[in-house]
Length: 275
Image (cartoon, rainbow, N blue to C red; front, side, top):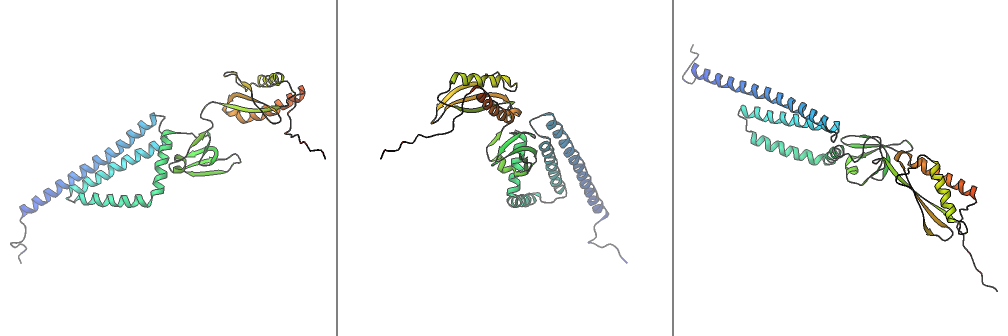
């Protein structure tokens, strides 16, 4: 029985084929090992660089490092396919089309992701600060890649999509260390304006939370229908804004009462025609 015929490849042809295949596999292994090593190197390098700067949050740094790693892995995979003679041009086109379809399907999610990255890079606010954004106000508890979480004054947790946060104005009440309180006190027209101002000065001087630099401003701002309005502007630490505001309102009222300075109620004089 004959095992070989004229159509059977010669031993030399088989050896050449096996040699070429072995070299191809060896080259693919080299590409795979180098690609995976380089992917890990890129991830570690970027993670270290991002950790050294305060402008990029750890969450964003880790995310970008992982993204770069997987990009290298994808390129390595395409190079492996090319080693085995697979037409990669059409494959890249298919992957691009699939990526576009996925992007359109996840448009809202990707928008939140992009906004989250921008928030974590530019940091218009930090965890623990009191902000007002997208019609909501509260203390920032967490900023993730997709949502921003606030705790309101009555301890309600609010999760806001990051694209709503990034696309709206943000009021950060704790960005600066100091804030200015502005209050208005109305006194009767018959009261001594200078005496009222001295009373207010005494109240401000008695509270250590009131800053003296810049100096407080006390001025008459308007002559109302039933009162002379005295405006008070005083600087304080951001954390003292509300407690000090409430305390000054009470302290000035009590000091006015002690000095006989009246805060008038709105009143109107009505004239009637005689019969």
